[in-house]
Length: 271
Ligand SMILES: [Fe+2]
Image (cartoon, rainbow, N blue to C red; front, side):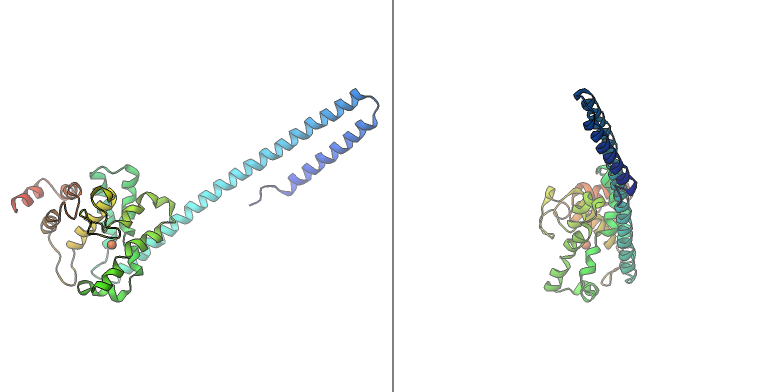
């Protein structure tokens, strides 16, 4: 960053020399009045020129800091884009998870708008969905592949993925408002979730949205140990797990998005 260029230094030096010369002449001239006028005038001139240089330097600093902020914002956008591509790439390697995070992102944004999350959070929910499981990269592939036969120790390792994902996303200032959603997307309303065992309203609403959409998408797609559930069966299962596991308001919002009132009535009738 070049704030004070060579030209500015030369100009300032010339002004200083002029000041020395004029002050010298003034001292050599007889009479206090002439001396005072010469020195005073020179001080005003020097002060003005110095003020101009300071003003230019401040403007330069402001201009450069704006450019640095813009560059940092661009770099962050690229970083996020790389993370999204990594998630897609990893999921594409497993036919059971292909496209999971992308679908979660799309549905999470719709659901967030439906239940009235703040606008700036809604537009970020798509990203939150796409990146919510990025911490799974820290889980050994051996454990991820096991799925239904996971032991207690391996499950404990899997539970670390939300914190690991949080650590990866934390430096991204543009995602600050949705960090809690990714960190707490495995919390459950009755406190049986992880990483902190939060209950009810302690769980951020955006995290409750991600939890419902994440589970819904997993239920409605094939897994090694079971076939994909129908929309109706998945919604019945989610309803069955409210309010103990999932937020009632969020599950109702999802049911609306998926085609209510017909679906709600069907769920009620099937009880
Ligand atoms: Fe997860």
